[in-house]
Image 1 (cartoon, one colour):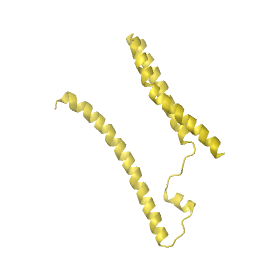
Image 2: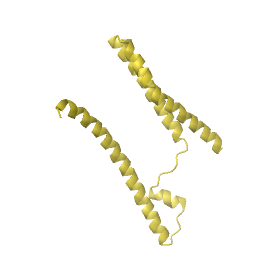
Image 3: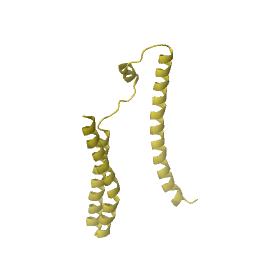
Length: 125
């Protein structure tokens, strides 16, 4: 395997490894909290929501879809601006069209998440 293949492969592997470490850390923390709660229940202690929250259990975020949707729409808009900038500086009209097409993925997913967030809030009220 040549260096020209190893470097990009290492770059992508590093991104995957960073995501794996972050997700795995969150899972391990949650498992430890749940084990503590189970032991407390076995010992006969009453677990109130305040006690569980004090242990560090994350709370449900009611507007998580709205935040995620907004972030994905911002990413889509950033991709469009980036494509326009490359097209303007390099004089290539195709760059804008390519980035416009690529930005459709996060943009449409963001719109769906915004819809879920808005419909979910109306339903719970």
